[in-house]
Length: 502
Length: 137
Image 1 (tube, chains in turn purple, red):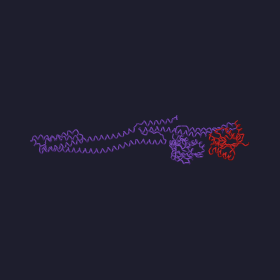
Image 2: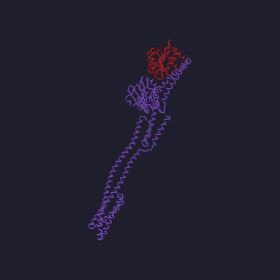
Image 3: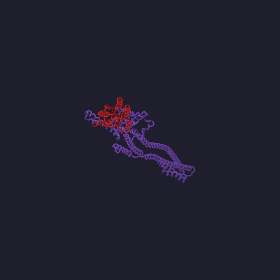
Image 4: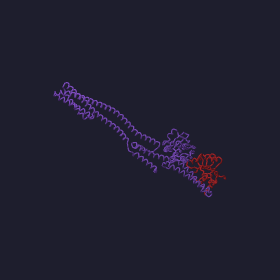
């Protein structure tokens, strides 16, 4: 395993690049996203609270002003009552003056705050009215001390006071009325906005909850799909799908590491199983090798013995036999070595018919030793496939060796291949008329380390490794079996229908 | 004895028969060569052979079966087994079933001649061993 091929180190570099790509994205952790979500909710609440605060303080000012307006109206009405009394009975002038003075103070005090709810012109008008009224009252007081002037002026002052007074009362009442209705409308608005805010908050919460759920369920679904993919033997590393990194990215990195380890274990498993198969083959190969060696020995010995008596034609025939038998021996050894050699996965365009024939050639002797018969039904017009020659050869070898284990002496093993052009697949069925597989173990036969062979005879990895290889090629293996009637394993592989463009 | 030693050679490798035919004829045997066990058995049924040389591992019918058939028809026939795997069990089975001897592939023509000479001697033929020695020289 120390002969790390460039391909392997290349894929290692790709893994590292992916790892870097996964980790180098800007990190936005789930915690950050939760905090941001709740912060935005808090922010909305803060804005609404501030707005409510401002509205409430305005309302407060209005209520205070309303109070002032009420008291002002009351003072003016009091003043007018004393004014009436004075003109009727000639008493209460000092009370009148006191109430007018009170009203003036109220207006002066309110001036600072009144600006917020009352236009400056309104206030000025009120102050002018009051000043005029106060002026009239002062004139009345002066006239009161001098009965002569009083008689002269009383009628004029009285009518002026009356008209001015009623104007002031009307104005103050109107103002108070206006303020009251404004306060009421503000309160109604406040009530409405509270409801609007509640609905907006609910909407925002649903939005955030949805967003966060999608953010978390998306990667979770992706990782679940990956886990299912891993279970079928696909160890393609996870690639970054989003522009940011979070806790799920760490999980993806961990899963990639796990897949790399699994791939490595899988490779070791495939190799160790291959070595088992090599062991099985070796005995047969040794026997198979004996035949050409025996032919060479016999021919060479006879050539040596009879050299002088032989004709040129006979000698040439014997030499040709020697060459042919030496080639035969070489081919047997090369076949085995080719199969046993550990080599990187190399996807190439393959002639499946040729692959099947040469694989059948590997077990030909095993078959002969067992007294079984093999039949090949492989059309030479099979479309090519893309795949790794060695791995696929191993798959069919496994199936053939299993079939051979199942058949008795004189049994039959058939390899039949046919294209499924409509779907772009090729089917290869390896059948035997052997002992079959009991129905209760049928679901388990592709499980790793499951074996029906006696302890020490099988690794229990053949079918599991074979299925792994076929799935890596985008295919599948199906099995049909009836006890005492035989089994059929059908390997389906995608055909390379589109010619390769170089 | 003036009768010539009648030998049948059965091996599914054609070269074996092709080379053994002249090799054994040279030492005074009448040799018939077969590649298919069925044909060989047919011939055995027709004619008596002194010695039958057969491969153990063949398609259709194996050497043990040939041995049984030969001995069943003519028990005094000496049967020599050729085996690719010189395993103890196969040899033991062959000998237990009455084979005269066995020879493991790969072998030299002379090694087979020696075994045949031994068998011929056991059958009362004398010329073969001498011829064999002569051919070696």
